[in-house]
Image (cartoon, rainbow over all chains, first blue to last red; front, side, top):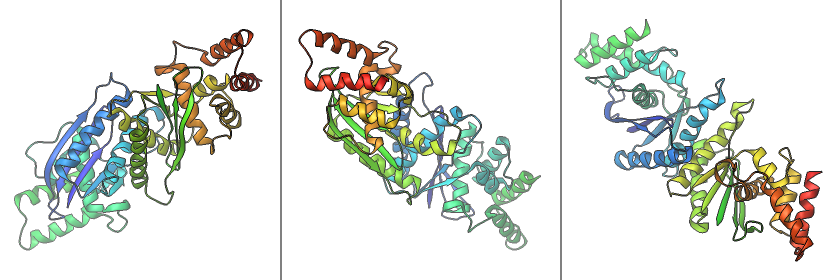
Length: 199
Length: 199
């Protein structure tokens, strides 16, 4: 299964693709941040984002798109661009018949780190470990997009009620594996990172 | 100039096209409301809206798209679908190189009726008169889309600071015309409607 994670935004829209032949061992395919010029009008920025996003759909042919669910915050003006960018990317994916799943920031944080209130540093750390990357994805929006994709893999579509605590389960399986056939170095790192992330 | 007005929404998205060979005498080209099923997921609804909207762009080839500017209200949840639908339609228009202009509801009301707080009934009444229609566009979202297109015609792009009080100006010209060569019956009706709308 190939998953495209989207951290929607006008100034920076994070895009991250993972392949998950094995649920517990997702691999990085591509990650980037699409930026649109702040001095351009909103419609022009959305048009550019549409073009760039469709190139990603063409190039990577994801089986599913995981997008951050935009939520009410105190200042509506700050989320308008996010809502517009999410609506655009959702519509473009859906019209191709690609399933779209939505995950809230706290769902993503909990799935990746075990802590629904993990900070950006911690999330980037976890994503780097989970995907066995040599360097952390930058900026944070890139890591967020990958985190969304991983979250979808572990929680499943529609809120993941069927797989609560997926990260914990994976950790438990890995811990059990270590007592048996042993973990790879990467798996070791990840299990360690999960524990670190929980502190 | 051909203008496509968009009253964005997921449940009902109003679309209205006017032709304006003469600024003071816009004509109806097409009007409809795109509905998407409330029991479908947001992404599927946005995908359907994208398809339907692009058919309108293909069929009517507007020179400009006028979209309602979504504003902060007390309850963010009520505007999320509107923001997503507006982001989608703005992006789809802009990527074709079609200019997009945004107008707030009160700007539209003021341009059409002279009253920034006109109610839906009054707005529908005015749109019907301005476009010389035999029956009022229904539902209100259809009339709103046409009102947006007319507003753009009279206010111009980018807030219309260059043409404040356009409706008033047109009315004044019409009134002057009546004293000279006289108005057509439709123009009479419209001038009458403008006055009624102001009460």
